[in-house]
Length: 362
Image 1 (cartoon, rainbow, N blue to C red):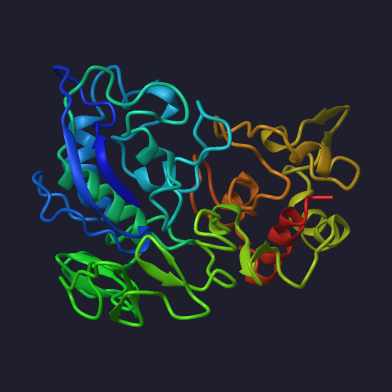
Image 2 (cartoon, rainbow, N blue to C red):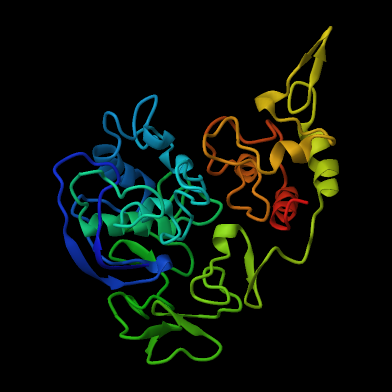
């Protein structure tokens, strides 16, 4: 992501209006290392981002705190990562608050700029956020792996700033980066490439079959964040890059597969996601979600979640935006517990649901 001559503002801090223009270096989302250390003492972990930035600057009275926070976004209570990662923005259709591993696709970062996709930049009339703090938020997002809502805090055991990084990453100034492709830390920490980084060495041109995307040499045929061209991300759709196109994979699951192997035996049961007769009465299914064979698709595709404001149960063709997947994996949920209760689905069955959604939820 590139921050260049941009007025960067805090998300919902309250104070006097200020505006400052910063000229910053460029970096890729997977290896942001623009400013270090953070002036607020922020390190790119969930706990630190919340304690040093969200809590004091956003979770204030009348803003992102309390029983009725602005935009339905509570940034003060525990579990903030689950309310951000993979969660749809309530005030901007098609946008996700935080996209794991991709700061530039995250609406949270979008709102820090001068021209966000929807509404006004944040804060409204508030002081700017120091660029080192913005970098910390971006680094935190870049370090979040799909499938984990924590950017490195103790709850997930992911890479913790200043300590061990996940395999393939190196800690540079308390940020885990890939020195094979990071143009700001190419081969070793602090080695900046004027053009691009390829396999840990600075190059003046990316070798075939790779292309230069913001200083990183990537294969546009297989790179999930740059598929076909530098701007196309398969990650945000929950797809993989195959021969330069975002693909759902070779296996195609149908609704009949999902219904027969998952919904009917595990979900559409008595007192759960099926109408239940009690004496002369018929009780509605839990959360108003009927997953019996005759009603499942109509109750899922394009239908707003009744328990998570701004989320859609199933977005045809988009796995990452489908709240059903969050509920089945327990990642990025707004409320409640992972489904089905007491009987976690095997990874293969979750993949079956993802395949059905990815292929259009027909």
